[in-house]
Image (cartoon, helix red, strand yellow):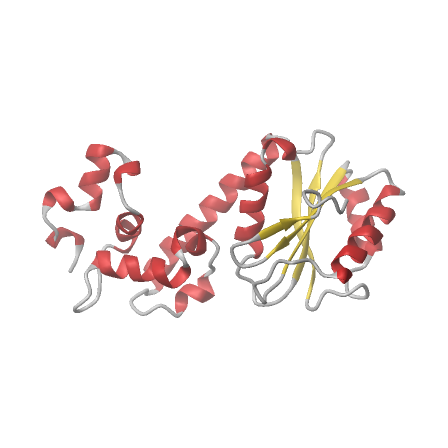
Length: 224
């Protein structure tokens, strides 16, 4: 079933135009992107199946093109449209973080990092470099693979902080296993980086550990 086969009053597009986007259910919003379903599966059913597979809209926003490729019925055009919406959301968050201090948007910082790192299958260590107002200057993924003290080089973080002329940083890495609980190694690495960056007068404001659907903040736990 395609959208044109749904009664006019129930079509997501007409409903959105008449009542506004907030009136639409999550599946209806996704159906607008999909437009068509599969034989025996309506577009609204397919949209709901997609949401169920990824854990709702938050999970879908944290997905990537590779994950979408495995979904039956999502051809290149549909995958491209969904990927474009995801990237728009990421860039919108990044641009807001560039305009507003981190302390004004702690939830958006977590949302942004979850969108960047939440679905990675390998560990990634990233740094958000901040200016004197704690607004975002640059987000960069500096190290990949199993993160140990030997794998993350403080001198590289210090070097990049100097190149960008930042005043503070937020550290972040993901746990592909899904559990966001920091390890002792994570705590030791954080203190090592904080000590190294302190030598160039750059503060570590937080270290966020990204799991599947969960973000743990070192600052909120009093570990910084």
